[in-house]
Image 1: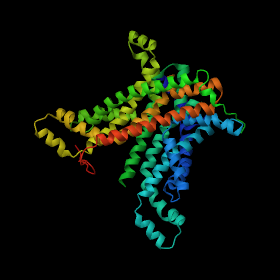
Image 2: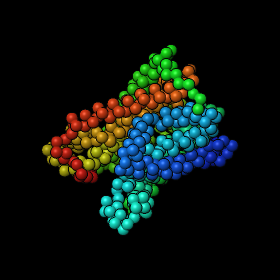
Image 3: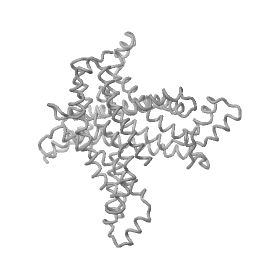
Image 4: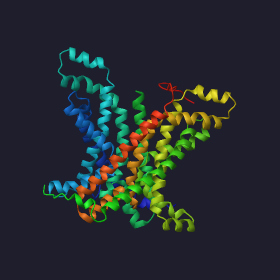
Length: 220
Length: 241
């Protein structure tokens, strides 16, 4: 074990790989943060869609969730990687493809979190809000969703941990995040043990730190 | 959009054979990794519930470390970093017998073992503590009480979440393509490379995964009914060991 290789490439691994500051358009956080925000927005529509009274809305939402939960993420990434150029007639950068794939894929899981969150709000809240004369959409926006969001926070943090780990798969289409950065360094230095163990520790620190936050939020 | 569908690429040429080989490799990889994960999960999950801290700590370290690092990193770790540490004859044997496959089994099995461990732990913790006490009071040792009473009950209780985790394992086996295991996603991509028919190849691969997942879920729903504990003694109760 010779940690020199880690010190020599520390800036590249952390700045380029983890934060995305450098000559490659990459970065774990630069992919994970927009993906969770956009995925959550899409997930709200899907989660509420599953709860809709109309079957024309709830059935497609259910199929969406069941489909993406039954397919490997690697497959979804390949779908977007090969299909976007066909649909648009031009290829997009890896970042856009990876971000689209993650938003679409994560929205299925986030939709389930939203649904569980909405269902965790007592029924009386809905009835009371309706009794004050609010329309159904207003009840959702002003009464149910704010309370549901509070209940969802621990699950959302957990899902963000999952997403942070999943962004490593963006490396298969050439997006330079932390794992790809380690691969690049390893191709030059041939020090797989030290390099992969180092990034494992980085991922672990992020995940473990956030799971502590999640369990604290759960208690509050 | 100017794309000409040609579904016949899936059964003309070698595509059909590739898909079949990919499916077989995916199933082999998943089954072996699943067995490894189950063994590691049961042992570490049970150890995390015992009252002896020196037994709990290594299990906790295993679960927290392996679960919180991406599977892809473990794939690279087992494939690139572990073989150089092995003795020469074993390493040569491995590279003659598909090292990437065995690295994939280890990565998938050890990673999912940590995730199974949490499922099994929560199963054990959902059994009332009195079950364990009753077992010990009949004269069983702690190890016997775990082996004969606690773990069999826990395994029957955790069938739904364990099914979920098993399906995750099956889907995650696709990550093994990054180290060159010729499983289903790998073969799907190979068909795309040879025929330039991405849509058809990906549809075939995706459908096979969906069918596999739905079939396993249906089988496990039957298994769950078959092994349901009459009266569901542990439903809604929690107890800490």
